[in-house]
Length: 297
Image (cartoon, rainbow, N blue to C red; front, side, top):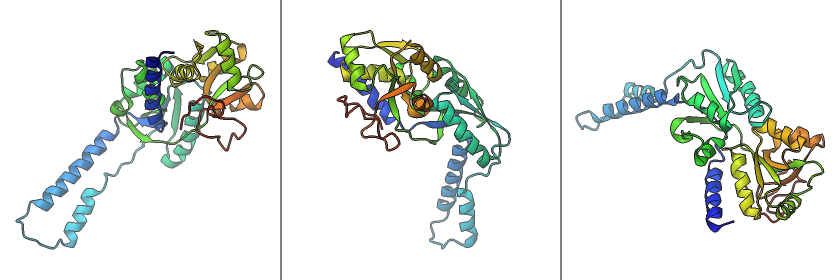
C-alpha cells in the first residue's frame, strides 16, 4: 500500500469516527420554523429592554412576566397524525431493528403511530434523499447513522447531513463493531489476515458500495497490509445470506444484526473494532489485541 493511500484512508476514518455519534433520527427542515420564532422572540425582548429613555428603573412584575412569556418556546400539538420513519436500509439489519424498537417506545411518548418504512437503494442514499425532499413539517423523518456522512465522503450522495437535515436525537451509541466470518472458516483476525496475505485479492470481503462497510474494507486492507477482493453483496440482510452461501468470506457489522447467527453457531466473531473489549462480548478480542491497530469508538 502506498503512503498516500494509507493517509487518505486514515483521513476518512478520522472523519467517520468524528461523526460516530450521529447514529440518529434526522428531521428534514422541521426545526427552521421553531428556530425563527425563538430568534424573533429574543429580538423583540431585547428591543423592549433597550428602547427606553435610559433611566434605570426597576422592572415591575408585569414586565418580568412579559419577558418570561416572550422567551417561552411556542406551544405545539405535534404530532397530530402518524409520523413516517424512513429507514434507508433493508429489513432485518441492525439499523432496521433499532428503528423499530425505538419507534415502539416513542409512540407511547408522542401518542401517535410511527410507521417504519424501508426505502432501500444506493447504500441508503435513496431513502435519505426522500426525507430531504419531503415537506419539512416533521411528519417524514429519517432513522440512520453516521453512514449518511460516509456517503458524502465517498461521493455517492449529493447532500450533506449537517446542512440539509436537522438532527433531533441520538438514541443509540453502539461500540459493538465486529468483523464476522462463517463458522469454521476462520477463528480470529490473524487467520483471516494470514489467508489474505497468502492469497492476495482472493479473500472476499463483503461490502455495500458507498457505505461504512465499504470504507472499513479499504481501511482494514491498509492497516493489515493486505489486499481483499471487495464484493458488493448489498445491505445487511443480503450480506448475511452471501456469507452463508460462500459468496463472501468476511464482513463488517454491528453485533445486534448478527447476534442470532452467532448464537446459532453459523457465524464466528473474529474481532471487535474498539480500544478495549466490550463487557457484553467478553470473549471477543479487539483487533488491537490481534496486532491490527484499528479501533472505533
